[in-house]
Image (tube, rainbow, N blue to C red; front, side, top):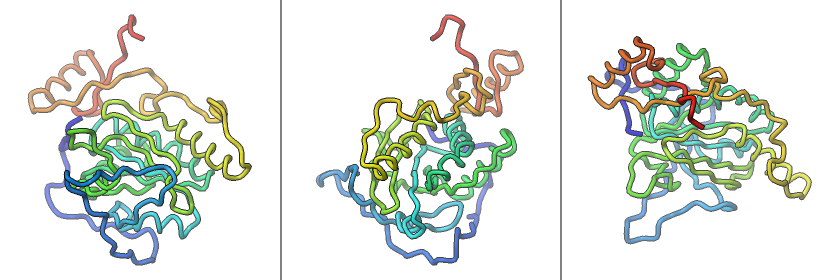
Length: 270
């Protein structure tokens, strides 16, 4: 899904976000990106999450130190860009399940390649249109340094895929998930995975297929209030954007904005 620039974004300037606490960040650079002639770094389960300073909507954060110092787990989840519809549905869903992650001593931290001010404007848009206030920080991975370090890019691609890293309270990577750009993640499954990992640690047991799944409330895509809609790919030019809105007026589909249109599948669909 190509990166889009939303109508009404701030034209220039860099927003200054307040820090999450009074602990000064440690200025440690992100691990260098290796050349094509070198072996590609691929994160693996069981290794230490690479130490890096990230700029976020809550200020600079040193990963994994910031969460390890608090004795917390964290889930880092990436997106290709702000103001894209699939990403928006995921952010709403992550926020609506935020309390479930917190109950597991787990924090959320999102990521996309846009700048902090773009993240901030996107957060405002989500609040305005869906009544959901995003409370967790979002990394501004301008230039894709974090994405490259954590191998979040698809083969031959430049847009960050939907990666998920579950990191425990010692800073160890415990699980890694990758989804393609066009398909949103199942957020309750990530909650279930964190619960399973913590249960294994606490009791020295393994968990079977679908374990704990029936304990997590799930009502379908939260943005659509449980309705089974699918997303129309965003417009890539001005005329197509106008056609999206015209189609909504004609009842062909519904739109929250020109870049966020959706419709039900045909009755003979899945």
